[in-house]
Length: 229
Image 1 (cartoon, rainbow, N blue to C red):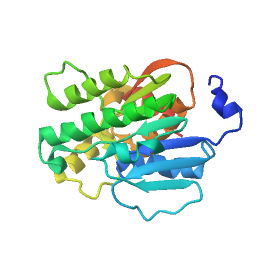
Image 2 (image 1 turned 90 degrees about the vertical axis):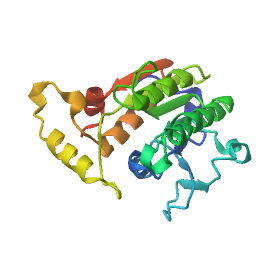
Image 3 (image 1 turned 135 degrees about the vertical axis):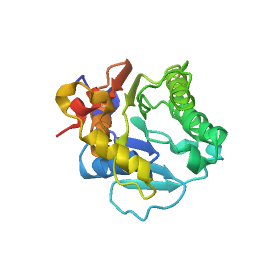
Image 4 (image 1 turned 120 degrees about the horizontal axis):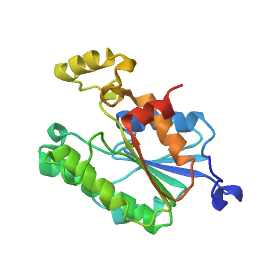
């Protein structure tokens, strides 16, 4: 690991910002951050109260359509974004783009303007701004946009299919997870293996601890190497 940023050396309160805290990865990330000593305060921004209680948790129920009313709270050492939705839940591609791309970018921009030095984004395997497919193209465009912001360091994780307990899991997804979990590691198909959300969350914390400047993109196979116990 590289030397910690001066703000942390000074003994100042260490604040982790989390958006997407109610989602599959975000919930696990918050759980890990609250359990460990990485940060003194874990500040989450949610649409509805989670009911969670912890001495380190600063949960803020906000209106994501009115960012200006609460953007002042986006101050800290790192912004973790696990924010995203599905086309089905959003109600179509345009609505999904408004969350996964537009809202993510607006939140990242607000944090960068307030001097947050580090940004960790959960993107997707196969992301590419010029992909012929909607979802990876959307993710790729977001990746490209956030790298133009004034963060000192940007870490982008590209997990494959996420493996965790979803309240709305569909039968097809359940079948796919079962088949892909059975892939032997020696086949070299690490990019196809479902990634447990606990592994993704640990990898997010590890890359956030490296304060070296610039961009680091972490592919699915690398996420396993970083985040597995």
